[in-house]
Image (cartoon, rainbow, N blue to C red; front, side, top):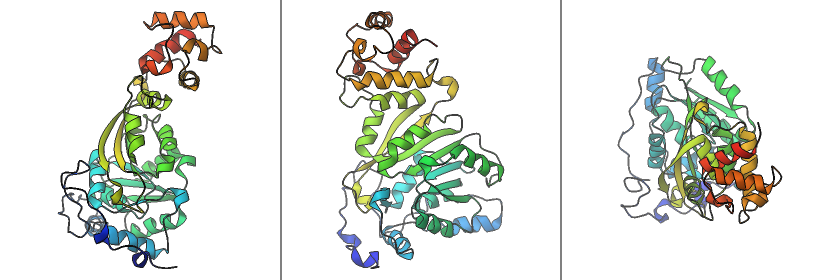
Length: 348
């Protein structure tokens, strides 16, 4: 199999954005030596501390391709693999999650371990979940000398994350010696599984405090913007705001990835709500079932789309009781409006 280093254009041909790009602070620095801005944590043992220091080497274009070549791998389109080439973006991704020494962080799709490396040097204990067995082996080998990194070769969308987190906590992997109350998720996600992962993670406010993901930019904007009467207003907006407080962090140009995708990316932070802070509905399952049914006929009035729950007259009365017109359509209702409507027409 030909080497990736021989089949790709030299790095100097990669286009660079202007220095004042809003994507991140500072220019592209693939060939430059980045200042040691990340603090090196004081680990429990001298050996672990020294290993963390040795892992400070940044992951740039050539380091990423060298890692892929070591396993004879080309990025697989079926797995949505796009590898990060700019270590500064990884630094900002970790900073967006405010990762501190002693934090327990789940990383989905670690790839060559470039983000894992920044997480480790921020003092985190990392549970990395990788579907591709070759990449799982690569990351396992890379961090084999560290007790604070555990790699699982699994499909995240099918794994039992609660069980895995429990095992990690019980194993005493946390180098700080203090058991964290909540874990965090920090990940450069394959674009093709982002919605599925978000639906899986956001209802887990009892174990995660924050989820910070690098997503396709269009999807990131759509998930954060919950403007009413918008063509992009969908059930996923209701879902996200039910379980979290989302925030758009920064844009990441497509030139930061290999292979270069057709679209830009962006980082979004989801600060998860605790279960006691969820909107008061008798059943989350029946609530989202109602919301999905309402949007099945997005341009239709709710008194038509929700007739399977109760009569049109009852729906009109429920809408009136929430201060909404009887002709209301789903894109005109905010989260709290849907909550009140559900509690009026769905019997516990």
